[in-house]
Length: 68
Image (cartoon, rainbow, N blue to C red; front, side, top):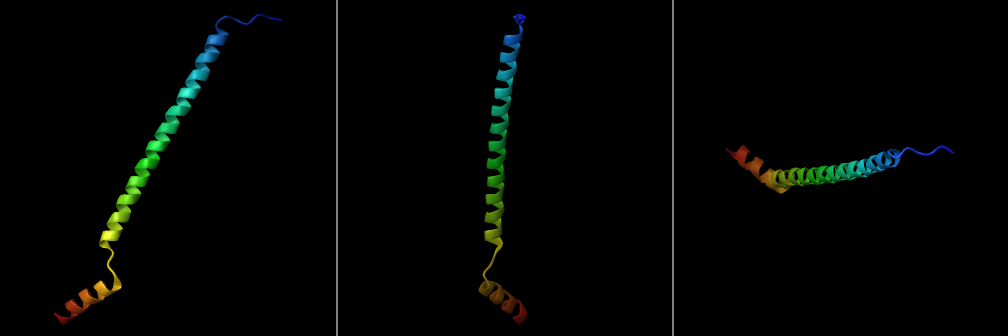
């Protein structure tokens, strides 16, 4: 059998370490993106709830406008 070069194992270890770090970075970025999406969704929902009126409120407002 041929002997392996002395630099193959350290390079393989570095490649594996880089791959693990890359996966961790991508997972962290994905979780941050999900948090941002959730906060944007919550803000949009809050604005929608603030703007929405009940049918009775809309009816009263329209009646007041028609009386004028």
